[in-house]
Image (cartoon, rainbow, N blue to C red):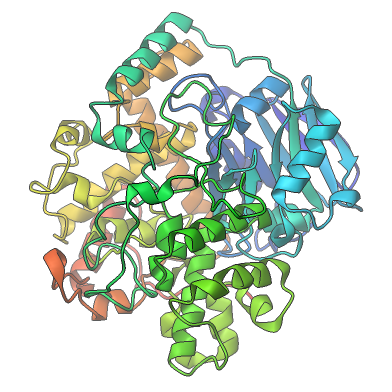
Amino acid sequence: MTFIVDLTSGTVEREYRSAGHFGGTILGLRLMAERTPAGLDPYDDRALLFVAAGALGGTAAPGLAKAVFLAKSPLTGVAGEAHALGPFAAGMRGAGAQALAVVGRAERLSYLLVQGGEVTVHDAEDLRGYGVAAATDALRARHGERAHVAAIGPAGERLVRYASVVTDLAFPAARYGLGAVFGSKNLKAVVCVGDAPAEVADPAAVEALAAHYRDRLASNPLAALQHGEPGFAGWSGEPPAPGYASVRNFSVPGEHGLRVPAAAGYDGRAVATSGGCPGCPNDCLKVYAPPDLPERRTGGLGQEAFLSLGWNLGIDDLDAVLAANALCDDLGLDPVSLGGTLAFAMECAGRGLLPGGPAFGDAAALPRLVRDVAQRGRPLGDLLAEGSVRAARWLGPATVPYAMTVRGAELPCFDPRVQPGLGLGYAVAPGGPRYDALEHDLVFDPDLGLTYSFAEAARVGAEPAPAGRLDKERGVRSARLLRLWSGLDALNLCVFASSPARPLTIDHLTALVTAVLGAEFTLDDLLEAGQRRLDELRAYAEREGGGPGELPDRLYDEPVTAGPHAGAVLDRTAFAEARAAFHAELGWPTPDTPQPPDPTP
């Protein structure tokens, strides 16, 4: 059952459908296609915003903590989908809701209260301008400390095109500007009150799977990394090899001189929280911030934060990165698009194309830059709040090559020159570039990879291959991995707990879905759900004129110059052949020659 909320009229209706969509992204895309006309501006009152735990999200078990946030993206112009980990999905289920579809625009800033299976609209004008932490505190003061809150900060209210929604202080749905869609609807937050557990058909089977996960934490390398300190987002130890991750806007593919902090450098920076993902012992998204930061609770450290706000900006100061990340969550900004847009501005400034612009490596200036973008308080911040593609259009053609984007969204910082399968995912995935759309190429490298994952990948037809090899088989392999993880996204299953490289193997995943829903679920069912989600995303993108995506020229023209990946670069002909094979594997027509995205200003 889905609650349809019209903020203009204040009415709430219930809609019942068959459960074949699992109540997540597929349902949201169908509602967007059915209830909104083509070509609608993302900020139009008629635009639809979808928030869902679905039939599985919020269940107290490993891998079942995700909530999905979905709308037409103000950054890309196609469907923007972001997932929040943490306890919010359980909060939705406890309050009696699996899914919300929100249309209209409230006359005054408002929030939705979900409680006892009912949804009501309440005034939030007194919260205008509040950061996520202050807004969450105020809403919990009204509705109880155990209330779960998904809120926007000033960036969402001011329609920054990559504004995020942040759940329970530190667990963001970060990508594609969904916080700006909240803001366009005068919606400050969704508050869920209630603690009714999500029902499962076979509790004993769910507990057995949870016990397996706990037993595997120490022996699975990635799970152990996620579980330990500082966690898989911490980036401690050796610096990355040249070409592995973006340095200074992907402009330094050789020796970069940047460092990573030792694990001991995080001492005193961990923030005690009562959150985490209910039912999952891994605690992979930890909360860190410098001890002297005024608001530390919002420092949920995702894997991309250090890459996007650190090395991508030429910064390796731990406290500067942690402070910027915590500010992003409190102000409601996506660290990936913010980092990509700041890196664009820094490169333009260094080349004399943005006089007075920011400089690479200036850690002291980073907090002010973050605030200026979120508040749109100064001309540069207002310009960069539009994202790098629109900023380049305003600054002039000479700056366009330095906007490292696909479909108008800034690239994740894992470099596709070294991992071309990721590059295919960035370019072809119809919702925009994500680093977690499919497992990374290096995992399946015969020499460098995680050999225990090879048998799992083989079950979907993805055999090991050298990470840098780019050919038709790379296209087929990447499409099959994308389909698998798309199935996880369709069901709100966590990719950071799942096959092929983490403790929940395909057999565990299918057994888990079967145990929760009470109906047999197979690998074929999982892959079918993944294909359906991709097909629906692609259909919506085509309806909205999204067209195929393309990677920036730099990744074809500037090879890695040093280290173990020296010489790595994308070959245009090989990439086109791999892309065609990728499309064929998914049953899609061979793409026309891709053109760079041109989002409407």
